[in-house]
Image 1 (cartoon, one colour):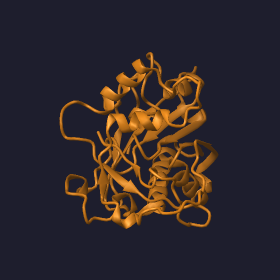
Image 2: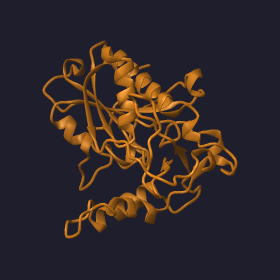
Image 3: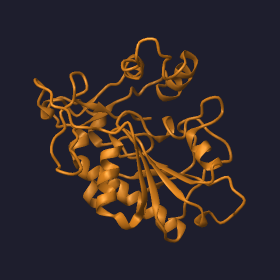
Length: 265
């Protein structure tokens, strides 16, 4: 499949051009949205420049993270300006990738949708996108830049296909915590609504007292208006349960964080 490219400017979530990779049988046939931002460099041959694939976390898709512009500039734009060939994608159930069928159904009595293939399945999604990027570039390796829950999937992908990976960069990575009285993941339901207030609370709850907020009120309001449109359908977030990439053992979440939420546009 031919690669798609960003326009030569930053666009709000949902407006970035891209392609949807056909779903693989082992991953439930769910298609994966992939987008591409060519490097801003003095060459038309992008294959000679280092490539990076952004792997988002378990709350919002690439269009609301690496590709979202604040004050007219996104992280993808900064990376491209630095001479990197930038790629990003949405996990199944996120953004413009295929939704799980049960995201449109009552979540009660249905196992968390993100556990359908688990972290192993998410790792396979990263591998599928890596293969696409390497194929579009005619070979070579790709660095993985992963955030939060995405670090687990990226680590699994790098372990399984080291031949495709140049460098592995984690920020806000998941670590193991021992916590008591956590609920049974199978009883959490298929998905969970994620409100603007809940997302704002997640951004500010760990900021030390006296330090500035992660986002200014103006930036957060603009970002939230893009990710949480005022019109239906409401956001429905399939729940994930996470495993460590090395030992494939369950991660214990702190209270209130037992289930991370996917958001869907």
